Amino acid sequence: MSKAVLYMSMSVDGFIAGPNDGPANGLGDRGHRLHDWFLPDGGDHQNAASHLTGVNRQVMDELMATGAVVVGRRTFEIAGGWNGDHHEGVPIFVLSRRPPDAQLQWPSVTYVDDVTKAMRLANDAAGPKDVLVHGAVTAQLALTAGVLDVLQLHLIPVLLGQGRRLFDDLPPDHTELELLRAEDAPGVLHLRYRVRTAD
Amino acid sequence: MSKAVLYMSMSVDGFIAGPNDGPANGLGDRGHRLHDWFLPDGGDHQNAASHLTGVNRQVMDELMATGAVVVGRRTFEIAGGWNGDHHEGVPIFVLSRRPPDAQLQWPSVTYVDDVTKAMRLANDAAGPKDVLVHGAVTAQLALTAGVLDVLQLHLIPVLLGQGRRLFDDLPPDHTELELLRAEDAPGVLHLRYRVRTAD
Image 1 (cartoon, rainbow over the protein chains, first blue to last red):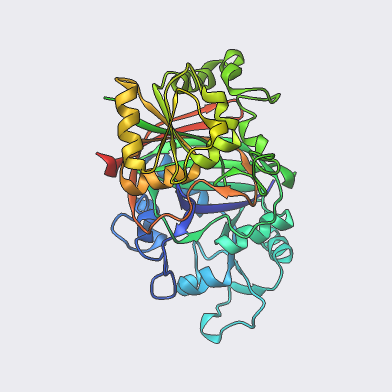
Image 2 (cartoon, rainbow over the protein chains, first blue to last red; image 1 turned 90 degrees about the vertical axis):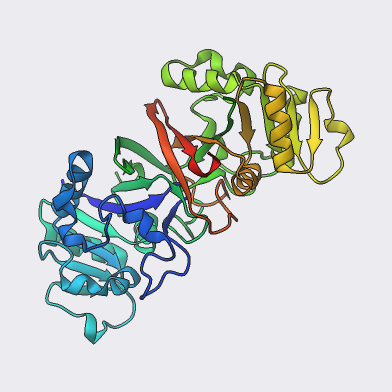
């Protein structure tokens, strides 16, 4: 069955971006360190998989095989909307309560104001494929709404000290996870957890 | 060579205690979940290893083989000072700037006001054995001072949402780690990282 899978690179101290992140500094100060495992020389996401091997390649291939994207407005804008194509031209659902920006509209992009609705639309669009979920705020909203099935964390062996946390501002709920897979690969430990309350 | 090793159970979202932790609620609301892997029925730490098997037993045996303890005042007080004996009667160095509490003094306990000094004393006391480091504030101070060698994290498959973070209030330093070991065991993933700046 189709699943909503959060794919995020996170430092051991829980950050997905360094301090001072913003449009001109997407991953924050030194935050590019978190993407070294698939973009060692910078470059764009779409060609990222080509040089990867082993477990890193497998995880990236799984990501690229997803059939729709649900992403937060902030992450989407910082990425320049990926020019309307995150990967393979799949539909992108942008979570936002504000009207769309004319500069960031493409045929494949739909703005949605509610995470549950976004996930339902993305699931329909993805058919039997999984839905790629991206962004810290979106992850938090999806977890709280009970519409996130899997956390695929790329745990990077670094402490950033400060920055933007993946898990922040969540309610004091106790959410059980189940470790499905832990795979060590060059520069990253891939952890796949099932969200048990999403059963 | 003797190493300073932080042993801490942490949720996937980075908490080592739930909200509202304090003397009467040491691990905070629902924080006992983090210790289920070695204390499924509550009970005390000293007998914790006896029922463990496999990787969980191995990690606990390593902890019990350390030759000294460095711990923060807060953690120490919440634990009632372990009645002066954390394990095997090894020396305990309590990090604090305040004078010792008369109720929490034992022959094996020394109060020290500086993390580097505490670690030096503990290293001397431990001889060839490792030093067990415990507590979030102590971990943060030791990392910042460059006197922590290894992080032994017991990663628990749960999101607590809120509580006390292991990594908080650190300077925006970029500290590289090296994954030495990742071992999945019942109820916990044991991750052992070397702190590379401590070389």
